[in-house]
Length: 510
Image (cartoon, rainbow, N blue to C red; front, side):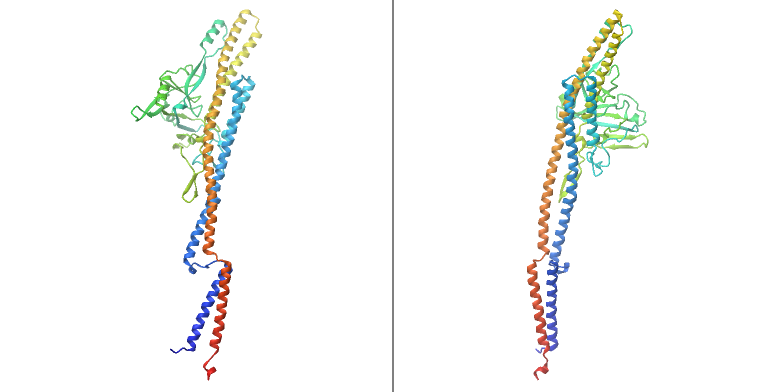
């Protein structure tokens, strides 16, 4: 085979080009410390790098955004619930005073004022807490406050409130009163006193007072203005283990009605102003024997500032009397806000008010307030009687007034007993609500710890993936230097050899 100078030249140029390409490759690796500069250099390395970088980006999103946001949300929630628990502890101290000692009028009203401030703090300051403009206790409705921001008479709500058979308590009431009458004698006051008695009734305490005496349809402007529209519906398992249901129609009254507390054994009385349902003995026995859950369906048309929005706790319907708009709200149970905190892992970060903050916190204080007001009122009548006695010299009139005062003292004794029991109910309320609150705090704490573990796991995973990415695309600097040196030597040798070969011609041998 004849080898020409052109063939030698082309071959030499090819070798020099290859050596130069190799030198450029290793020079780029040495200066960039990367194995490849473009995907075409090594598609396998490029694909792996894209996968690793995508994984790191996702981990950063989880750790630096989702997890941190979830932990901050939980911190806000936990702080609010711990503050509520501290408030309940403080309330317990004041309630204990009234339950164990007779408090004078100034003292008990001072205690009541403090208790009301504590209740306001529980709901307005803590239960209405928000994180970055989102309310933390309102389920999916994070843009809506838990409480009404102002009083309103434009909304009517049809509320369905659920209870368990264990939620039925008792209410103690002093029926009758002793009133001063011109010309009345001692026997008249004795007869009035004989009519006064302390009674105990089975009751269900609704979440609201000052409810509506009229139906929801009537509040909407419909023709149904009939009373006794409120229902109490029980659900239970019958003797055959089948689901059973029974509806009790209630009798609507105000607590100020003369017959308000006349409850038949088979009756259910709805006291709309105090927000109570009084349950007859036979109805109570039936509910207890069946261990029935039950639902009270009632209407409320007026809300004060800082009242709880019914949709946050109950299945309900609302009607706006101005816009004529009606909204149906489903049962708010299970409105879990979930954050994606890891690959295929979601975490619930919220706690609903209905699962942590019991409405009994303010309803028991309402009951106590009424009991204190009754004692204040009878003491006021006693003070007036003492003034009349001090200003009377007529023996007959004096005898009548002393009989009047004596009857009032007996009435006061009964009302003080009810007031003391109301303080005791407050202590029971604190214990019960603290248990519910503590369960919510414990549940939140468990989820918080799990989220922290996930965060630590993601941090370790991020380090591992970054190490894998480095192994995939980074070069060892010492190896890169050796390769660069070898490539440079090869290039220099190629140039040297080529200069020697191409420097000779045929004339050199003639």
